[in-house]
Length: 371
Ligand SMILES: NC(=O)c1ccc[n+]([C@@H]2O[C@H](COP(=O)([O-])OP(=O)(O)OC[C@H]3O[C@@H](n4cnc5c(N)ncnc54)[C@H](O)[C@@H]3O)[C@@H](O)[C@H]2O)c1
Image (cartoon, rainbow, N blue to C red; front, side, top):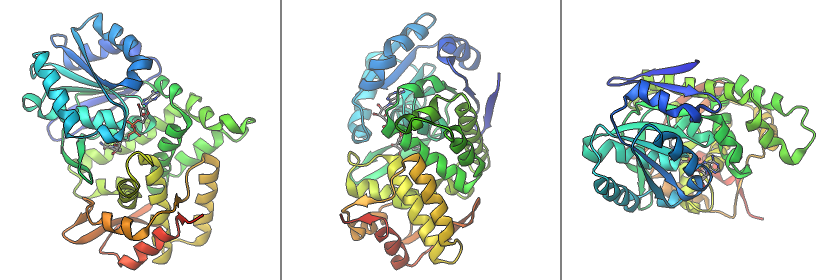
């Protein structure tokens, strides 16, 4: 079966992408991490409500299985949740040989991944991503983290998984907001690495009759597996070349510098990651126009794509100064300098250090709506 192999400095692991792979989870776990271990499924109440029983029954047939069910939402990606996971792991008397299986989106993957990295100095980790973002991005590459006070992902570490089991069937229960969330990240891959990915997605809905359902048509289309595969492969190749995010991996942060600041300023509950990144991408394009790299025509073309994919183009009634302030807490702002990923042209990204603050502020202002 088609899989992607990720080779990092201390681990090589496989990403399997296949509809209904969930039914055969045990076979893949046995082959890739062994049979003599307990599996601790970490999920949230929402995902548990839809898939909890099914996945526990499947894995429970061959493995001793426990569950840890967390509250749902970015605001629970924090140290208190970690403490809860650690105390559950103690109660279950787990050992380093046992495996954590995060079943959920990026919030679950990042939090449970960090728990796996730190409990007993490192347990086995089998990601089972259930959102677009987690299938194309967050489950791959070993970044694990929780938020602390105002700062996103500030407490974390690199910890590669042992296996990633990606079942596109999970995407069928996402609501429209979460599909949009994922499409924002796909547009990022398209702009930075391969615009054919965006063209492919647009072609799935070219003849869509029902406007209301067009985003569901995208993730329900079997061709969407190829999009997941392409994005996952891009990410895997970059991780192999720059595991610790010292250089090329920074390119994946296109749109994220301002995106993260928007998330922090508005509050993690008001806007989701993908929406914030979608606006961050427009700001990065705006800055690239300002520096003479891109044309306004380019922006128009991207805004048209945003309309088709229902991506947000501006944030409501916000304050550019507040967003600028929170930029200073961003990890991508190193030693007082900002680091931006811009585009010199389509699929020609560039890492830009120390941009003029006014250029950044103007780009944000253009994407704040005051009505
Ligand atoms: N580690 C990395 O490299 C990396 C990369 C990108 C993003 N992230 C992180 O990922 C997080 C965002 O991830 P996300 O967009 O997956 O958000 P999320 O994990 O909050 O999931 C979004 C929503 O979808 C629900 N959900 C999940 N799967 C579902 C399903 N199959 N059906 C129905 N509902 C489902 C969740 O319960 C939640 O309400 C952020 O915290 C971000 O910082 C990490």
